[in-house]
Image (tube, rainbow, N blue to C red):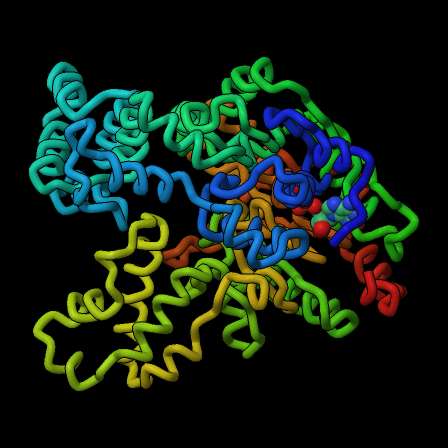
Length: 560
Ligand SMILES: Nc1ncnc2c1ncn2[C@@H]1O[C@H](COP(=O)(O)OP(=O)(O)OP(=O)(O)O)[C@@H](O)[C@H]1O
């Protein structure tokens, strides 16, 4: 539990339930939301049978907010007064309970994968065809249109594959992620249903509002009707590709909120790290961050930037640097990150080959809810029955009870996890051994585990690490080659800003002159066009980094 700052006290004590909290990375927004939730319960503003709804975008973010809440709200108060849900989970709940009022079968099959993409590839449309079909369907389904209106709009558009795939979906009584949100909005247009939910959820808490799509905001507004606390940061808007519209959302909610409270003091990062984050602010549009307690950071923190002749050399150096840091501060967490996951393959391979332990955030790591189902499945699994089953995956899905899982994100991760179990059992592991390999993304492991963590830029959103190495500061990687418009390139700058601002003590950015392609041929790579912006932070070069590490006050670092 932290001592709230005066600004956090203002958020905690703000009487009306309609509030906007805007602050750059690391200023304590999520902490302030947890403090506010605790206060709403303590002062009886939200009392049974009403609950507070806290919405998140992913299961990992759900774990993150639940983790924070543990510091301020007792288990029983959380159980009785707080619901933490993803947008897809919320939409699925509405469809299951009230689908019939808009003519949707409440038993409709819930999504557990990107079915439209899978279907396009099965039909041989290739990646370009898949992109076209997805764009057509996504854009239409982000509007409050029923199935008949979607069919009519598709007929007018005339794209034969989009029409066929949508017809197949309806005939098979299945839903995609887009359908769930669309149906939820249509259901909430019914005043009786909307007021039922407003009575149930007395207040809504929305973190990372800049990532909302207009459709998600419309759903929230029907549910929350002026009782919403939003928190976020436009400079961290990195989900344009999923339909997020940060400026549009901001312009919509500002006039509706009773007050706007702003913070600009970072509680997360050292002065050196903040200088790197601030160096990007002209591109990210972020406020300049001030360090809340500059004297408290041993050595003032570390900011570094260096170039390697080859990605393999980069991997060797970063691995050695991470180990040197961990030798000095074994309780620390070191993130090795990059814009895209595949750019981490050299360091991943190097760590694997040298037997250095790492936590891969995107592989075999389950959120708390999925891990609980998988563990119970493994305990109940009878191997003889599995061996005798004609279709092993279907058998395993039945044992896991996937059909009863309502939360689409959990369904997806469970479906992936069941495939992973089958592979491991196929490797000759026993169910107990497979269970032993499960890594859970909750506070006891991923969120707090010391050591080296490998993760891509988007996955790191909302998280923090003591040290962050950002690999692959090359054009094509960041900005990603698909970013062509100025708006897309600006979003790429914000992704770099998000990666930099995950760091507490130190951040090091690297570029490699040669990066082999996935097929193994060497490719020359230019430094990222964002590289020169970091000059303003006067990052240390290789010698400077070595010098800092040599004289670093490890004892003080360990305790901070
Ligand atoms: N009042 C406080 N005193 C000391 N530390 C604090 C305080 N408030 C927050 N912190 C710490 O500062 C760090 C950043 O806080 P938090 O994650 O809430 O920021 P945020 O604004 O949500 O960041 P981001 O936008 O990057 O997700 C956390 O380690 C948190 O525990």
